[in-house]
Image 1 (cartoon, rainbow, N blue to C red):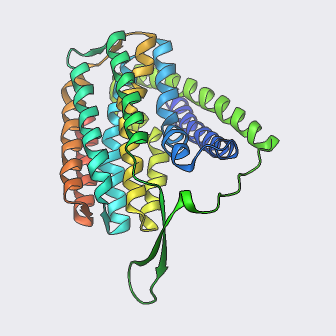
Image 2: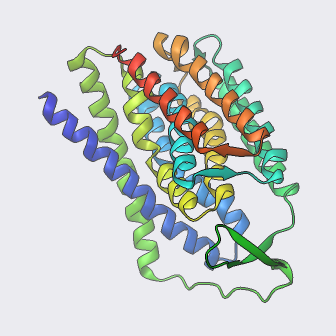
Image 3: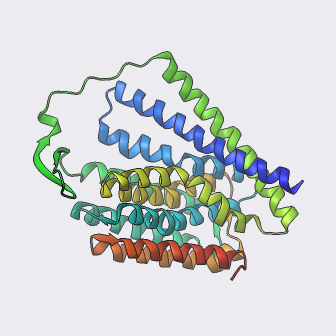
Length: 332
């Protein structure tokens, strides 16, 4: 029985991640075809797409009444995003160089979102009113991002033979360039969008079922499983995006993906299920998960202020994450 539910857990995670991928691809193309700007598509559709596994599984958990999975999953996902994904991206890319604009906007917003979430979680539960506050904060975050964004530009680079890095040739103002031809919406896009949505809900249902059963069989709290396995599994889209970006030398993409995802997790992935019912925070998540989230976010902000994350910092991040998992399951 244990082996069967482990297989269901792994399969449901794979289905959840694949469903998010189908949804993201089709929704992005439809958004561009409808004339939505690439910037807005990136902030909304792409940002939502990579966080869909966390959101759908959290809504399903709230509907099933196992609300500790919601908070543990969001906290665990953010810990994995910072310590594991940023760490791996820094190791793969050798170092990540962060632009000044990213520091000016995203670091303060991440810090504020984390502090706001910690404030709502201080009494070990997220109430309906607190969920409303979290969602309003995310709306303000989106408005601030839209209204204060820098002028959209596109930089063209030339690879220099025998030399590492790229040399910028020129910066192009996208608004002054010839409009990019909109893609056409075909039946396949609509079908893939629908299949992606259905797949997400099916994967989420069986994921929550398997977490409940595994916690009963192993006599481990559902929150503990969510802090580790569920959080890691639902963070796979961010891992793939950031690792690929790091390989291509696109540090801002690798890190910007994490900033957006972490803010979304704390404010929306917790906020929307909080509208369904009050969310409980189990003792392990409160006593261990929250402090680790605070430390990880602090380390991330410190690294961001320096505008560089070196390979040794990435290795340290990964090591801290391994230690976190080991302590969580009493391996160390």
